[in-house]
Image (cartoon, rainbow, N blue to C red):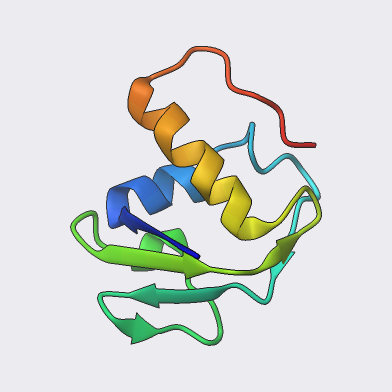
Length: 87
């Protein structure tokens, strides 16, 4: 299963220190931006706010990369003040 989000959401996800504490890493995620596969990954500053980003699979030092994105997206959209820690 994949997670689809806007470029703006992707930037917030990747720059969220609560979900990516110091030393956290990820690998083997299949990321595409506007339908173009990014086999070497992508930096958040390379994605426009209006892009469509799809993340599939992947591992991280905290949890499965896909699962992190699936949990983060609805919490962020709701504007929740306290978010669950995934570590």
